[in-house]
Image (cartoon, rainbow, N blue to C red; front, side):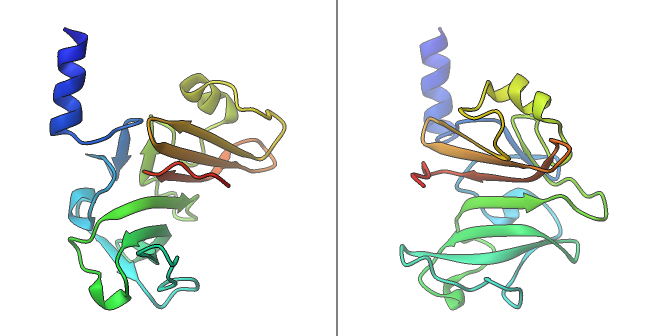
Amino acid sequence: MVLILTALCLTSCGKKGWELEMDGESISLPCTLEDMGEGFEYNFDYPFSGNSNNDGTISAALEHNGDIIGMVTVEADSTEDIDEDSNIHKISTVASTTGQKDLKINGIENGASKYDVIAKFGQPENVDAKVWKFTKEGFTAIFFLDESDNVTMLSISDEVDED
């Protein structure tokens, strides 16, 4: 029974390593702006936006309701090719000064403690590091911790980051 349900989800839901939410909407990668919900836009006037990664993807700042909340990597060869239906393969969000908490990876969002991360993802290779990286089923999740060991930035990609 479990194998049948897993097979159904893989074919109907797409590849999925962890539960993802953006502004309360369940998403999977790749996704589009429309999949994320209302108020999301690309901003190419922000530093590093519009940069090509020389792999068929472009970086763009991600806005939600007018606030820059992070960066995304979008499948495109140029910024002119990008629209609301373009596939997003990586989402990174930072702790917001407005308290906005948009992205959740397996229930973890900016502001979570390192103990919350350990409870959901297990022990990282180096507990003393300030950047924790986890891989699962073709996905990479990265958590950046501040001096108080709380998540200050998180990132999810649908490709395993070898760095």
